[in-house]
Image 1 (cartoon, rainbow, N blue to C red):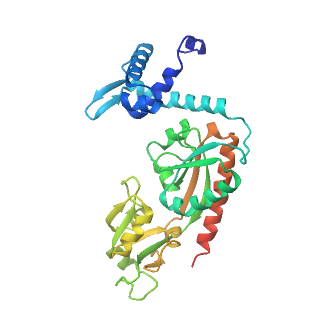
Image 2: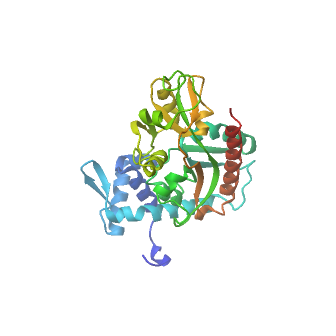
Image 3: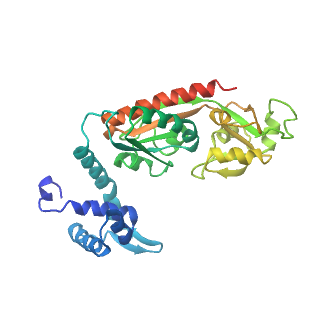
Length: 321
């Protein structure tokens, strides 16, 4: 099918079914997703196989898996379906007061705690019929999710963007910096290493067990890269995917957590906040979206709103004691 005229006589609903099958990897679940019977979905799968000349979905060790041909079709077909759906249901104008739309955001947990409450407040005030779906950042899938529209906007640290090849050079992606902030160390308030001090020396810092926030469970942290350049290293006693639960763990242990200053603004009296004893690059949060949706009026509205909220959050963090 190299020409649009090749689609004459093709039931385009087949591609909606293909998208459901690709998402669910199951005839039964795909049928449930689209509200049809299992036998109807099985019949649709046979028609898709005949149309595309490929089995598409086959049995693997862990269940049903997509063939290479099907994998290659997922992103372009899903992207086309999203674009078609938006073209048919949305105008080029976006009036927040009357718009009915759901936006999907991929954000880290620390940003959720700080920014989602004020964001929801603004949305309820300015766009009462707009809803949000907030999902975790899936680093390996994020570029595809932004391209297909499964995720409208993503908020990620600059270090994650670079590791995931989502930098300025990434094809089709646009980004802006939301804010930059420094790092601090968090320890339990009665930690013996402090002894009432308000600073932590490098020697004692390196002797402690450390908590590393790693959503992917991989790689060294920013601090580790700095220490490596100094010919030093720290012991990572715990890796955990989220910032917020890490504070509870630190509060009940002798571990130290090096984290963005924003987390310290949420810390209670059970935690001590002291400077990091090495010079660490600032924590930079980026807002990412796909250029396909750059001129979407609703998209632009949400980008500006998120940028305003992030500015307020940053001012609040900088003003915290």
